Length: 242
Image (cartoon, rainbow, N blue to C red):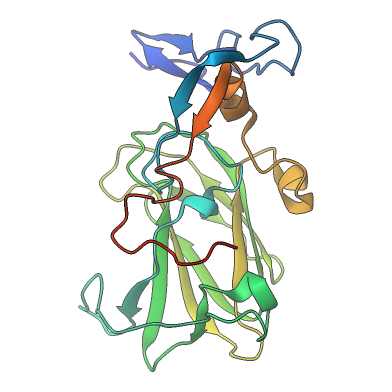
C-alpha cells in the first residue's frame, strides 16, 4: 500500500515510511540541523565512501538545483513526426568572453532553422523525488518550454521565472523535459536552474547548493571519493581543470 502522507526523506515499505539516516518524523520530513545529536558530531576518519555519479536518473539528492544533473542537450526538430534526436549538431557556446560570460558556456549559441534542443531532469526515479512547485529560473531571451507527464501545471508569469507543479511518478513519460525553442544569440538563454520546493532563496543566493539530506548522509564519513563525479574513468579526460 502507498504511504499517506507520502515519505519526504525516506522510502515507503508496506504502507509505512522508513526514514533515511538522520531523518525522523511519521512522513520522514524532519532533517536534523548540524550538531543536533541525531548524527555523529565528528567524522569517522577511518571510513570513506564513494559518491555516485551525477545524472538525471540518479536517485541521490545531491543538489537542490536538479538541473545540475541534467543530461546533454538533445537536438530535435519542430517538424511533425521527427525523431527523438535528429543528430544535427548543436552550436554550443564554449567561450567565456561572449554574451552571458561563464554562465552561457554549454548552452546553444544559435539554433538552426526548425531546430529546438531539449534535456531531461528527474528521469526514471521511480517517484523517488519530492513533489510540489519547482522554481525554474533562467537568464537571457528566448522561449523555454517544460513538459512530460509528471508536469501538472506550468505558470509562465515573467521572463526568467517559471513555477512548475511537478509530481514524480512511474509513468513511461516521467520526469521533466526542459526545452529551448528560441534563443537570442546576443542574449542567449542560459544559467537554467530547476530548484526543489522550499529551497529557492538558498539556491538563488548560493548559500546552499547541496540538499540537507545529502549532507546529513555524508556527515559520518571522513573521506569522500569523487571518481564518478569527475568522470575520471572517461575515455577523454580533460587536459585542464577550472
